[in-house]
Length: 206
Image (cartoon, rainbow, N blue to C red; front, side):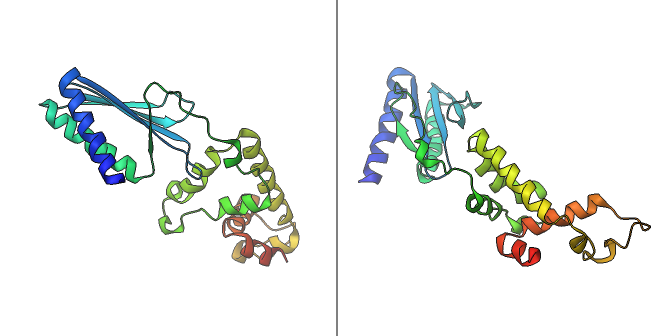
């Protein structure tokens, strides 16, 4: 039935554009950590896409085509892609619903390590790509939870801030007050320990 519904909606979309010269459809995704909207508005042979986090104005993109049919076909293709990515359509004149508060987990140590585990190590060499999944998760949370995440991170780093750890980081280890020691590098090493996850962190800590 879903495929039939999609075909029916797409056919109606094209029909409406041909009759009125204009059509708009709105979709949202509030599954898991997502809280996004996406809309497409076609006016004759051009369309405007608007997307972003629910509650914001979002970003827009316009594109013009040679014919109305060409524009409709491209719009239809984009709509199908969104549906395949778990976006659900809402009525154009209906206010986009707020995501239920229950979808947001309060920050605690378990959630902290859950976020750390989202680092994409397949993208080593591209720090932004490695961090992106975790940052995306944090961005979906309340400000107070983000602050709590930072506090838990500070606590984890502080517990590793001792001579017994500083003296065991390889060639750059602490060797006494009369020898040069890079506190910045030591912080980097401690961050790496946390980034490697809960099990590794506690194996080093203990």
